[in-house]
Image (cartoon, rainbow, N blue to C red; front, side, top):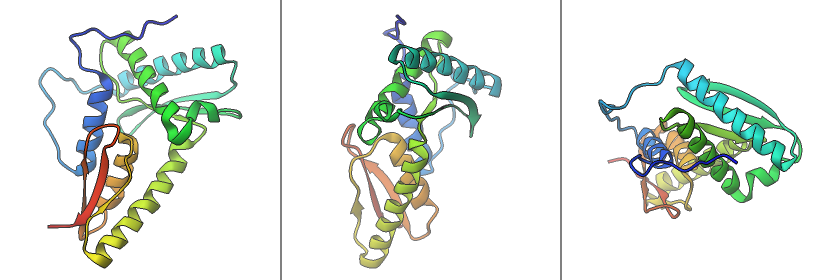
Length: 193
């Protein structure tokens, strides 16, 4: 069994990933800390390989079949699992997928000593959800432009919030921001200042 515990002195990779996703989504940039180093594509691909090995072991234990693709996209390591019978690994509204992603990030952290921004997708769930969220974002923008009042969306994961922020920030006359704390963190879309 793999020990996925993290040293007490380290920052949890999940917290850093949520911070960076929300920061990137709102359009603000922060200079990297001197202790942080920008990972090369080779390092990122190595992270995706570690993640793929971890997920492959998990699939073997669960007796699930799936093809695993490891890649680097937009400066992030990614692992995509495709195949039949994978819905239980996604769970309701992606909750199980998010948990598996965090476990996989911890496995990477244990192997490398560095936090990872790995994005795990199973059965194409994230691509499908991204399209759904784009429609939700456009609908919220229409309501804001029509009525001029802020629109509060339902609580979302960091991945979901980033998808919505990306769509809203590409449209002039409106802006978005996240409010609240996990697991009830949500987006508010409002007219631009």
